[in-house]
Amino acid sequence: MDLLLGSAAGFELPSAGLAHSAPALFEVKDNNGTACIMASFSASFLTTYDAGHVSKVSNMTLPASAEVLKNSSSCGEKNASEPTLAITFGEGYLLKLTFTKNTTRYSVQHMYFTYNLSDTQFFPNASSKGPDTVDSTTDIKADINKTYRCVSDIRVYMKNVTIVLWDATIQAYLPSSNFSKEETRCPQDQPSPTTGPPSPSPPLVPTNPSVSKYNVTGDNGTCLLASMALQLNITYMKKDNTTVTRAFNINPSDKYSGTCGAQLVTLKVGNKSRVLELQFGMNATSSLFFLQGVQLNMTLPDAIEPTFSTSNYSLKALQASVGNSYKCNSEEHIFVSKALALNVFSVQVQAFRVESDRFGSVEECVQDGNNMLIPIAVGGALAGLVLIVLIAYLIGRKRSHAGYQTI
Image (cartoon, rainbow, N blue to C red; front, side, top):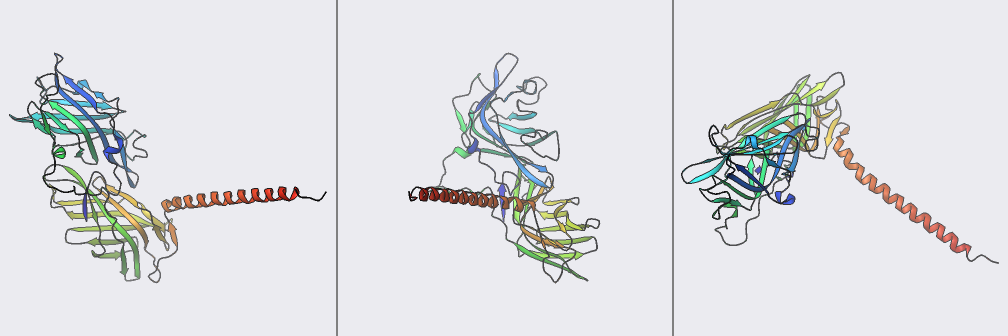
């Protein structure tokens, strides 16, 4: 299964409609004070970032304090090659739109977004620090001397960022210092040519993959026993120059193989279009095994570069003592590279020393331990409540009997 997502899959991406705010108005003026670009829209920014060995998603909206950055905005006169609207907000954030035109139409040729990974409010525990910039082409275009208007969501997919604009009114190359009355409406706002109820939108979060079972055997017996559901989140550029993130589930029907070594155990799972290799290492000093390497080779027919390949051999995930098994019912996100995240569901795995083809003692993940705290706390609260009621009942009964004592 593959599914188009707005950011790294495995995360539930909030809809822009959940964070509606009043559209802000931005203007770029020439040296004579005449407006050449006007834009009014609301926006949200969904950014996937690395936080150790997991991927997280930051969601922020364009604040009311956002303003035009004059020294980076231009009407395109003199040395500037194209009209540019630059909007600055927060601590080091910049949204930039560049415009181009031909004889009949103008368009937002490129959109750039600079975000600040040092901002702990939106990027807690980020592995990298400082600014990062991503960009993409857009489908925002309108007839010359007409206003571009789009009430619906406009999604611009970048490397690891999805920008959502809504309630947008944009115009460049203004014939006067105001929006034109005539409009070019975006395709999203156009009525559907088909009759009947609208088709439901595809879910933003894909269906969880099915659990697969793996058994790798060498000369000395089984060296890897695993039961887990795997999902690949791949970010790549399509042939139309848009960047997307898609989710691919590893299926139980996919063939697998592996190798057993004294310090390295491998598992390869694949089909005709992809091969995923997981490498498990061991720390002899601490007697711990862990997932240390992930390599993926895959064919993506709609990508500019159809042959996709990425790897990371310095991971430390799915860790447990040799002879025991690692188990986690919670979903885990392993950040492999900027282009790949591996989602693991309902995992139990044991590497190197497996006795009688059975899992050893279980070492649970921290996430499952945290999940247990909630029912324990609720149970404790209920027990305390029952105790209070019982004590109150006994006290009340004692007082009642005291009222009928013989005189």
